[in-house]
Amino acid sequence: MPPDVATVVYVVLILALFWLDRDREARISKALWIPALWLLINGSRPVSLWLQIGPTIDSPEKYLEGSPVDALVYGTLLAAGLIVLVRRGRQVGLLLRANGPILLFFFYCALSTLWSDYPFVAFKRWTKAVGDVVMVLVLLTDPDRLSALKRVLARAGFVLVPLSVLLIKYYPDLGRSYNPWTWVPVYSGVTTTKNGLGMICLVYGLACLWCFLSAYRGQKGRERARRLIAHGIILAMAFWLLWMSNSMTSISCFIMAGGLMAMTSLIRFARKPLIVHLLVAALVSVTFSALFLGAGGGALETMGRDSSLTGRTDIWSIVLSVARNPFLGTGFESFWLGDRLQSVWNGFGLHIQEAHNGYLEVYLNGGWVGVAMLAIIIMTGYRNIIRALRENQDASCLKLGLFVAGVLYSFTEAGFRMLSPIWLAFLLAVTAVPDATAPERLPSTDIESSRQSDGLEPHLGQMINLEPSGGV
Image 1: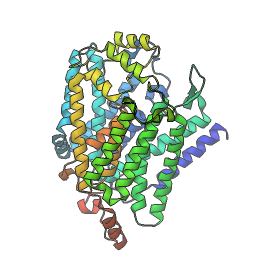
Image 2 (image 1 turned 90 degrees about the vertical axis):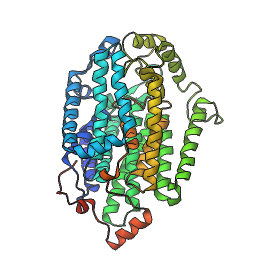
Image 3 (image 1 turned 90 degrees about the horizontal axis):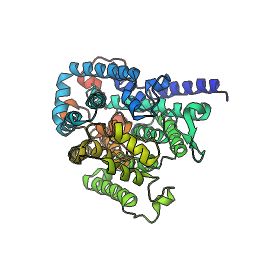
Image 4 (image 1 turned 180 degrees about the horizontal axis):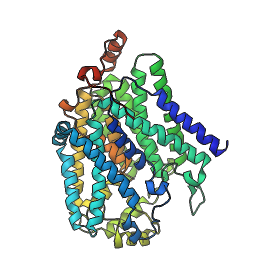
């Protein structure tokens, strides 16, 4: 098929997916365009790269410069998001007061820019990182939060996943490259790396799985069939892309987090806190043991990985030898700058810009203080998710899946970094939503089926009497 014809076909497919997943009763805000654009940009490539006007990062000095175009885009979206939050002052205030550990972590990150070797660069990066929090707040303060989550997360997948298939199959100059040593094809899709492609398939694949499971539990009919088809197509594409990318971290995380989501969504008994604790503990401990303790009886070799985790242990050794100030770190997003970046490049032989471990990344930039604050976020976030599961809150299964995916993914990838889809998904999962800002609840399967069959399920917009508005 010629590329031009394929482009038309895929555009029609994307529009068809939007049509199949439509929800005319959803009362969501037009402000959702802001986080939607944020997710689309951070889930693919910076605008400067799409326009081919970004700087070529071939030296530490150029890495400091950044792109004025990207700064303008991020600044505009951040300002727009802040305007929305100012207008939702009461709901935002309740959310902020309920999430002190997250605020404390970002405050410490801002403070750490003071001892960075490049404080102005670090502060600019911190400003972008705040954008992730702003987008989460815009989503969680929407009048119809459940519909907002489904609309933004699922439809970001409707765009990014099919376009990745299009670029890989019909635009190889954009969607794939070759390993310079082995000349084996490397598939990246709309992103710039195979791990980036695996990450978006992981995040938006889990989001579509959640929507698929929600539709599966619903009342049989045309609307249910439409949604099952739409999200089933994306899941099939995501599986294919995960296989093509050969990103084993994303593949294994999707299998474990997706399986956990399916169990807690479809099996009522599996939602009990004790069962969830056991399942999560088993997933984390088994993964940790296989990766770092040599357990698992050759599981890594079976997955095509060696004991060095494809060179990751060498990277960890090099960056730890360069790290300074273990208590406070080098300052927010400041480790991969200047002389340290050049030292790592010289020691490893490749122009890498991450430690391939989220926890180590936090340690390098924030020291043990930053790691301790991250640990508090993980513990309190997990407690919030368990409470949501116990109360049958909306999206609790999705939050559990994204949380587990974030924790496991960061064992071998830099998941806890700004502007990363997995980091934003993790923030979305651990953010506590007070009852005053979350009137809607997702009933259990039995209750939900009963209400829908009797025609008694009220819509949130009817309960809170809001005027409808357009959405994404």
